Image (tube, rainbow, N blue to C red; front, top):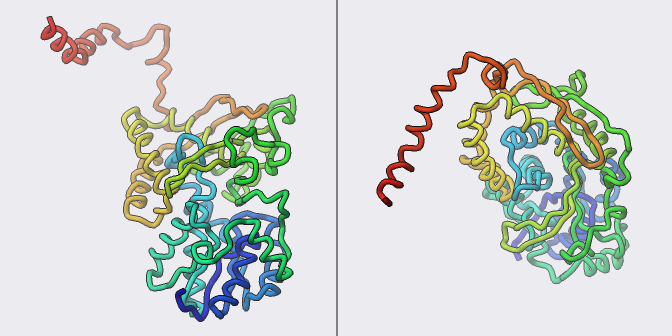
Length: 399
């Protein structure tokens, strides 16, 4: 084992990190400082300081990172249109770098020589945390108990905690692995580990309901954007945190934003999860609609290609890299005219467009109309002849 005198632990109060505090003290004999990042977990943070101290931490800090989480990570990813494997809106992925960055700041302030986390050796989060730590403090040691201890399962962890009188927020029967923040809530494990099983949505969902239980009456909303950033809801200016919280409530009520995804993890295996992202799903739909109105074809098509790479960088934990920064610079340039208003209808899991407008609209009704216009349709003949010339040459050659 590495040596360590003082470790800063990424602490959530969940199963893994509840066990890690006594484990670090027993196996490293080090001081443990717990750091809980508030990225929108809400009530999960209640009583966390007292719990950390009772289980052996010398200090516990709760850091409010919600605003920087939204402004520096969520909205840049939204503007990029980044979606991993066509469905996942990256809720866990981009929360890790903002947490790790603050962990490093506290580790330096407190004179710690190591940072510890509760990520498993099978998952993506270990990579996300550690790449961010290396970006800001490559000299710090990293302790990942899941890669060291002899506990083999979450059941072993529960037994370890029970033997030491550590209170847990779960039981063996409700032992889903969950991650909650302002943007989403994920569920993994238990019956979801068999892809043949249908998710037990009535037992799982917390941010919303199934479409069957959503209201029979639709609800129409309008979202305002400035340079790709959502700034208002139904005409009311809102900060990013409040806007996402409000949309989570609206979308959840109407059964919006629930996916059942079998994804390819960075470490090579496939894993299955149910993700709830009601507000984020609404924002992605609205932003995409507004881009249809304000981006030219070539820019839009190139942006779609780069969005796949952007999503991979976020998913792989490569936020603090030159490539991600370069892609964000491209994205910011594309968003200069992505301003306007989008109207959407929420109804039983669906988000239905109800129109959009922008002072930078590239749509010309006069050009596109089936009615009379100044467009000279004869111009199309020459265009087609030149555009199709390579095909014509190949056809003549085959003859």
